[in-house]
Image (cartoon, rainbow, N blue to C red; front, side):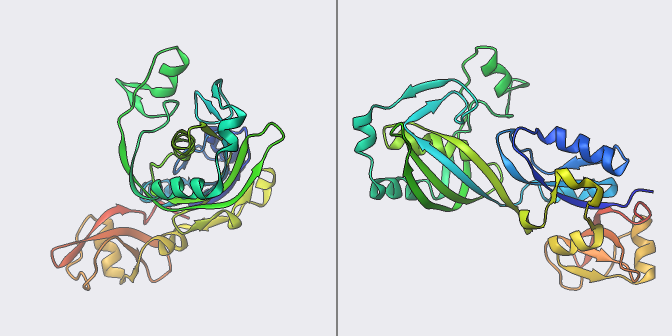
Length: 296
């Protein structure tokens, strides 16, 4: 039986998230592998995968805050707001020469906090049942609605001029789930009057999970798996369950004692296994998802 849990992968560039899932499925010997949040082929960095019952934990990670490192090139706008599509417009050297660091910082500040963002047209968002990127690639014009996102930090790390006269910005972004870094690049370039797109993107954090602890795709023979109980303990407060409570939860019963808890809770058995993710209901607790009996 394949062990259940979470696997952190440092996704290489030019790999799709599906490529990574397929590779890990083969490495661990099970088809029950999923991921919590797609990374574009251009992007590298942290991809959180669930193995066997670990796929049930992914639901709780989809909405987690994330951290990205990115290179934004000012001076060129593209169809996909990254370097993997056609150029729409190139700024003149005079316009680029007029862009100075204080102005960049000022526009970055305007894109920080709770903002309204229109996602990149080349995205996985569905329009009338079809993915936006499929519509764009077939020649259709796509106008997506703006959405509220939170950019809790947008930091300019460095700024350099390329030999062609473009401006490359190294930035760090902490943001809510659903934020498009490509759209930040587009909007920053547009505000500065020169256009902008992403040339490199790396996700370094998903919730409490960091890419520093991720497995390399080239070394899956030594794959490190985070067991369910450990992963759940990273995500939620923990309560220890008696044997009677474990049996009640497995049979779909609620626990009468909520122990003054709020929010989601990981229920751990005396043997150290994750039994269920629980939520308070009145003065008691009910299971959101049960794991006991499905894990090694």
